Length: 145
Image (cartoon, rainbow, N blue to C red; front, side, top):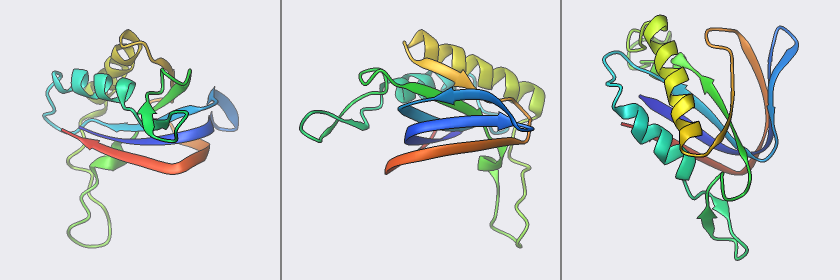
């Protein structure tokens, strides 16, 4: 399981020119389920993402979570994070989970984020999405477990 977490000033996700999800200040999270990932990992990711202290406080120190700043999370499934680029020039995606199981785990993680108090907006699983975002910082974290 992997997640790329980016602090943003705003983000918009569209499919075929239609806006699906939009957030202001918050996080864009690209989330990947890999083959044989255990569902127990979902709690680690949900709790960690909801509580990461990566927003600046009044002194400029990264002491605040997305919830502390009243932000939202745009949570996007992205199987390409499982890419194996070790051999050749074409990535292999054999490490990514089958779509049916990956989608269930993606949606479950989104619900768990909400249970931890986060405000979550979703992408469209399996769709060709366009994401426009204004990165802040930039501040990007890669989570793996």
